[in-house]
Image 1 (spheres, helix red, strand yellow):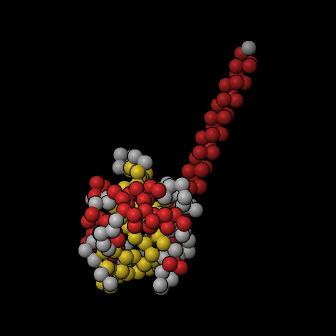
Image 2 (cartoon, rainbow, N blue to C red):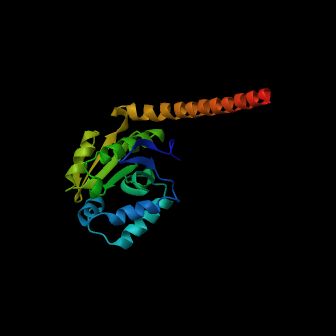
Image 3 (cartoon, rainbow, N blue to C red):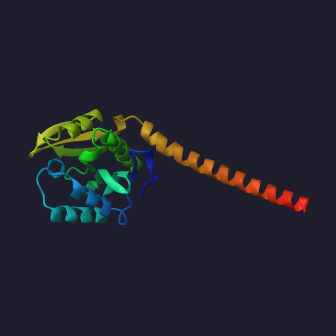
Length: 207
């Protein structure tokens, strides 16, 4: 369960949130099906048919995969998947990314990377494995930006990210912003109630 329902809203551009496991993961399927052939090749290291993607999304909904999504108008336009560590040969949770061509060059990949790292820290993970297509130069550069040491293996680039070496800013925001938002909402509710009571009391005295 995500510690926050939404994160870093960007009016006019969309926002990033973690999808709930069963209710919203069809959004992941639709996003992956919308990927153009090149993006689909980069994501799955090959040209795969729609039936594979439908089975893949269904498996994500059942195996505990965490999906962080970039949303616009109720649609997933970018996704970061974090797969459970027991699915990996080396016992590390593995992350993978996909961004539709219509939202590229907006910093969507960086937003997804930051959020999935915060999710991983929240779960107590110390390392992540990242895998991307060998020709996906943008994702390779982004992974390197976050400290991944990539190596070419079996037709794709793979590497690890040491979470203990990552800046704590994003996790700190998640820990601090939630109670502040809750306190602000509680204060606003109390103030509204007090105004209502005062007005009612004043009306009674005037009568």
